[in-house]
Image 1 (cartoon, rainbow, N blue to C red):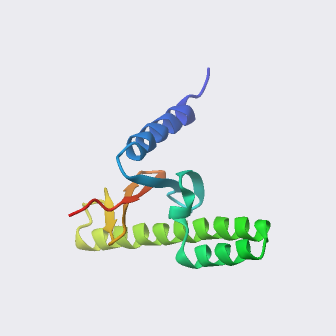
Image 2: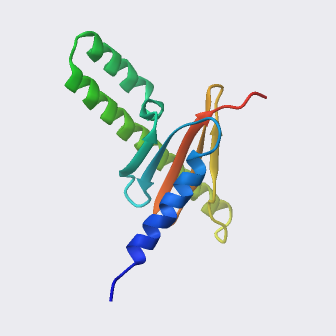
Length: 136
């Protein structure tokens, strides 16, 4: 007998992620482990997932021809972004629970002047998409 639970869960994740990333204006996506916040998967222009601090460090490293340092800075920036997303979801979930213990967090949208971050919390994953802010 073959256990297809993991495969079916992975297929469902890929289907959700595919649906989100096909939307117009999507720059990048990141999938985090819901429990730990670990980065499981990224796609698209990962520079959209980095923090401003990591972009500055990567730019400085590229001017000094330190490619490994630039790559390490990019990875660190993605990890920092993931940590901020995980903290945001955790805090938002606490707010929902404090407001109504019978309710649950289903979707978060954070819109800035330059972009929008959409987070879909799943039982096992946090699906996050960064896309351009549509004109008002």
